[in-house]
Length: 107
Image 1 (cartoon, rainbow, N blue to C red):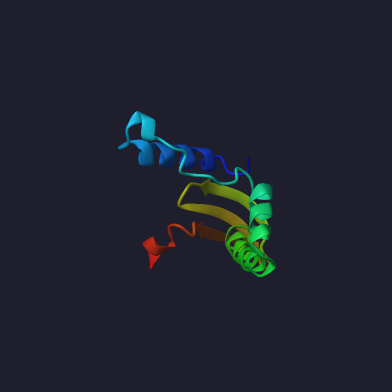
Image 2 (cartoon, rainbow, N blue to C red):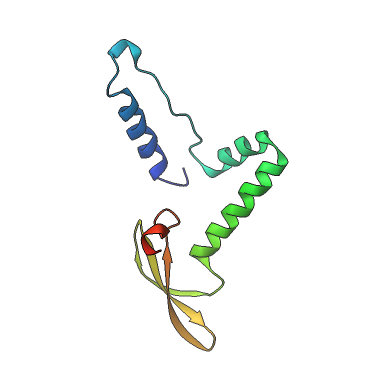
């Protein structure tokens, strides 16, 4: 499990979609991978072009969080953002990474 939020999101969504159904009509309406390796396998089954497009997007999103600078210290990390002290040129700088899901809050 590479993201501990995956099972919680799936279980919560399953509960939501079944909350208004009768006991004999309940079903498992959410199926997904539980880890990155399985997800890449599923994506590769759709096709090479799709896999490559997803791979490029994943790399873009990862760069927003890992960056090209060396991280000296993480000051805070939450669901909306992460703040780090980074090596910047000959000195240090502060870098704030905003989750791609929350970037619209800063537009």
